[in-house]
Image (cartoon, rainbow, N blue to C red):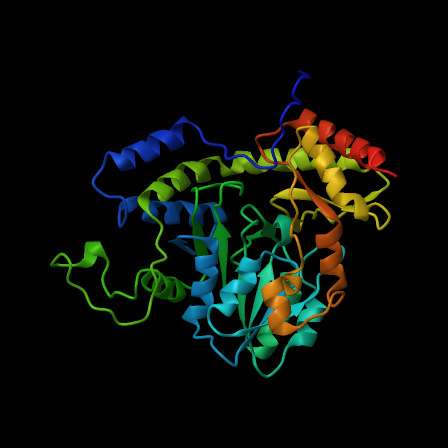
Length: 386
């Protein structure tokens, strides 16, 4: 049999002895939920972000939903949402009964276009949803100016933005609140889980209650076990102690993970610059510090029809890829049928989704892997030509 190629997966959780021992410690203890580790992770996370109050939740989607739910959004309200994002960004709005008003991306960065946001505001607009696409901070100064003019809530989807900074402020602290994801291939993982980050302590206190059924007293605050009152509507969106134990250890390693991603990105982008058939999105600068979740190679119009053949050839070479995202959200069946946007309505978002291949830069890979990935992509493009 021929030798199997060296495997370079798109994402791989970086789990060490510390995480394993932390989880075992929870399993050997008396509390799997309602324990001290979730609180500790919240404290450590806010410290990493250098500000705000953090509230642990079961997922980033849960955090986004809580952000809108806490402000009472519902039927008749509108939220301006990037067309270029994961469906969870829009789902969180839909859960409340409010409507999504989609806007196109900036072709240079993939982030939402602030001018498009400003043009989309109506008398029904209640909030602005902002996604830091692939970890690059959005143009928050312009977006916040629109929000201030119309008194709008600003919710940051920071699913890919742990370690993203704008003018020295961590993403999630640039709007009213942000939600982070700890899915296995993200910058850090808790297997499943998320975090809400906000500068407003009162908002954090309300979300803390609303993530746990709206009860008025935590387990530690109850003078009689099992006795409490419910004073508001809430959900079961808590993070368990196993996930929090993972998070405590992972956030200790986050700086190292981010440094590896930045170096891998630098090497990969330099190697990809030799490929004429692709375009790269802006990677940021000293003001806009990216978390470098991955590198999106946007295929030229001539090569794009061969995208999936190129992906297949990369897979044969042992290189994992992904697509961020498979379609612009308004072109997903649910949203297309509900809102009726035709193909081509969001040309920049659609081009990125329809013509890009996401390449890995995670800390499970090294500089020589980046060189190999670029070389394999160049070969795959060449060999796929008719």
